[in-house]
Amino acid sequence: MMILAKIALTGVGTLALATAYTFSEGTIRVDVDELHAGGSHVHFWVPAKVAPMALHFVPDDKLREATEHAKEWYPVLKAAAKSLKEHPDVNLVEVQDREEHVHIQTEHGKLRVDVVDPRENVHVAVPIATIEDVADQLAERGPRQ
Image 1 (cartoon, helix red, strand yellow):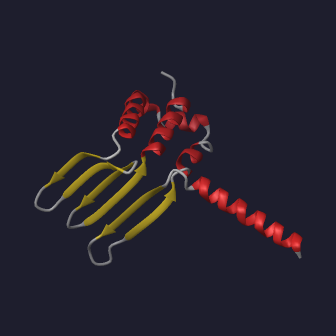
Image 2 (cartoon, rainbow, N blue to C red):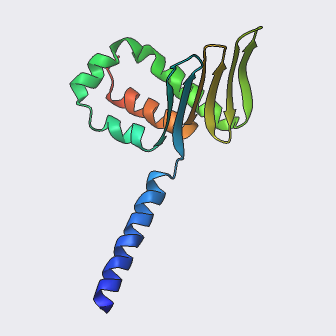
Image 3 (spheres, helix red, strand yellow):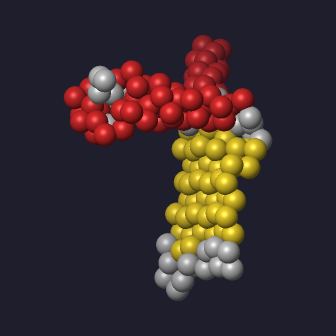
C-alpha cells in the first residue's frame, strides 16, 4: 500500500511541476464578443509557453516560406519587445471617437490590445517575454538576409 502512495505522490508532484513550468510565463488570452443577435463569443486562454514551443514543430522550409516577406521586420520586432520589457506599464496608443475605443498598452509584463465598438469587443493579452521568444526564433529560423 505504501508503494502505491509513493507512486501517486510522484505522479502528482510531476504533474504539479509540469503545470508550473507550462504556466511560468503566464497565458495568452483572447476574448472576442460580437454584440449582435446570434453573435459569437470566443474566449480562450493558452499557456504562453505553447507559442514558442509550437514553432519547434514547424519544418524550417515551411517557416522560411511563410515568413519571407517579414525578414526585414525581425530587428524591429526584437527591439520593440526589448523596449516593452524595459517599460512594463505604459500606454502605447489610445484612440477614441464617438463609437470606438482602441487601447494598446503594456501592463504587468503583457502587451494588451483592447478594442471596443458597438459591433464587437476584442481583448488580447500576450506576455512580452513570449513576443520576444517568438521574434528570436523567427529571426533565427526564418529566411536568411
